[in-house]
Length: 398
Image 1: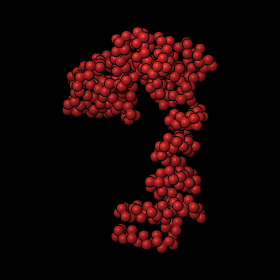
Image 2: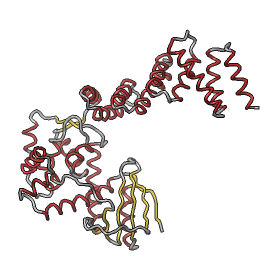
Image 3: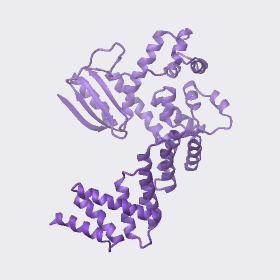
C-alpha cells in the first residue's frame, strides 16, 4: 500500500504522528517542492525514524565543536594539518588521540538526526510512503524516537520563523561588516566563529554549510545572530556585480555565475546582468545556458521595439548554437518586420531560414514550414523559388 500527498511544513509533524500511531512501516520519500534538488528518503518503523540513504563521508569536525567535544583552536589546527597532510580533519584528530571513536560515532549520529530535522524547515513538501519496501539492515544507520524528533522540530520551527525573517533568501551572499574581523571573531561562540570565518563575499548559507559540514539550521541561526549584531551583511546589487565580475575575470566562473544569479533576483529584467550570466556560462562551455540568457535579452529588446539589437543577439546565438531553430525563426520573424536593406548577417539568417523551411517540409511539418516561409516571403515577396515552395506546402492544406 502507498500513501502520498502534498503539504506545508506546519502539517508535516501531524503526518509523522499519524503514521506512528498507525504503526506504519516502510520508506517515506519526501521532496521539497520549492527546490527539486532537496529530497530525503526516511525509514519508518512504527515509532522510530532513520535515514534510508546515509550521508557520504563528511567532515565532522565542526559538528564536534558544536557538541562541545572539540575546542575552536583544536578545530582550526585540525583544518590546517588536514590541508598539509591531505587527510580528513577527523582522521588527524583521531590519530592524535584528541577525539575517540565514540565521539566520532556521536557526531555521525548527530549528522543523521540533523538531516531528518532539516525536512521540517522545508516550506512545501510532497511525500510518498512505500509500505512494500524495507531495505537491508545497515549497522551505520541510526534510528530516532519519532515523538522526540517531532518535538525538537516544533521547537526549532518557532526559532526558524525568526531566522528566516532576518536572513531572507538562503541564496543571498554574505560579507563581513566589521572594521576588525579578527577581534570580532574572537568574541563569538565557537559555532558562530566558524560561520563568521567562512564569510568571504562569495559564499551564501548553502556554500557555508557545504564548506563547514555544519547543519543548515545552525549555519543560518548563526548568520541571523551575526546579522542582528551588525557583524555581517548581505551583498547588495552593485557589490554582487563587482565581485562577480572579478570572479569571472580570475577564472572562478561558477562562483561568478552564482553571484550574477543572485544579482538577477534583485533586478530580473536587467539586460546587462543576463549578458554577464551568458558570457560566464560561455566561458564554462555551457552553451545552452548561455543561449537562454541571450534570448531573454533579445525578447526584452523586442518588447522595447529595438528590433535590430534583438536580431543581432539572435544571430549571435545561432553562431554559438546552430541547432537552435527557435532563435532562427525569431530572427527571420524580426527581419520580416524590418524595412531595411539586408546586411551580410541578415542574408545568412535568410539562407538558414530557407533551409529550415525545406527541412520542415521534408519532415512533414507543413505548419512549421509555412510559418517560416511566410516570414521569408515578407522579406522577399518576388522570389520565385519561395513562391514555388509555398505552392508545394499549400497543397498539403487542402
